[in-house]
Length: 386
Image (cartoon, rainbow, N blue to C red; front, side, top):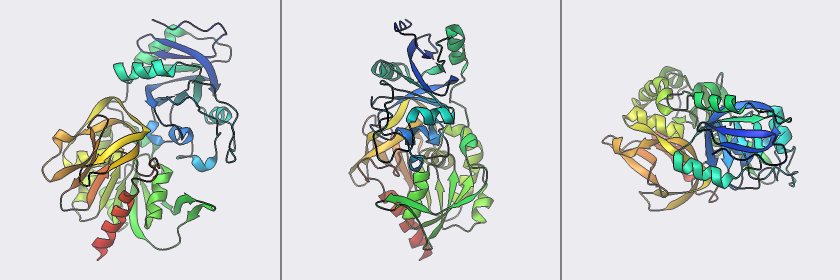
């Protein structure tokens, strides 16, 4: 049944494709947006989440109620602009209280054209997503509170969904570029890499900046290429290794042009490392399949077990598709699994320096449980160089 509007006139409305309505207080940009709805369980990092290109085509429900209380700062952007279509929060954002804050969340969203809605029962909404799967929604913000409910529900129903949708082409870089910024460190912030390093070509399916910083900090001289780069484009740069980045959308759709490129790279002896969508792209290139998940994994508190060491890492995740471990071919080993649902979270090719993980080792819950993967990639390139 539709939710009963609050007594004070609502200025925002979230309409689900099944006709369920949530009313609240709008902030950020005005207008409408249509997307898939997911939830994120992280207690920090709302700015990084909103600017993560992997959230293209999605509105994010934050289960943690305190969103906006530390403001925003350009240093925390994972991309030049917010990529998530909108945000849903329990409590309206407050004025920032943090020495790093350069702006308020609401004004930042307004300038960047992204809609927020506060005052919702996010617990109820999260249960709905878990029980019914990620719904298609229309999110509207009108300061006057005028909403065409029938039209909003119709737009939500008309949203095609993420299955079969290639979004990497929408968030990838337009042309190649070099990257030399390293991870943030007190007291100087982001330093620049000056020493020579392993030549790495990073394929940008929607790469987060902190992934590139981790590569640089692990001893890599990084050149980023667009998602549509071909194997000959990569090999022309004579790299020591190839990195496959995170990104949004259906991996099988992106794989139509990405898989042939990766297979061309796999014909060489180059080390290959993939994260998130890059993990799924590598799996497809090796002959495995991917599947759409019910509600995906989105948060900074996901336990993942390394099957080869027995260690458990607390990881950051953001994916709505997963590699079907039952389809991994002979010679490809599953290396990591989620302790929440047993889904695949990593693989490697036996006898070769080719590996990938589903989660985000560049993020720091844990606080740095997974940085070893970047070091493993660097060591593989060093070993190849002799």
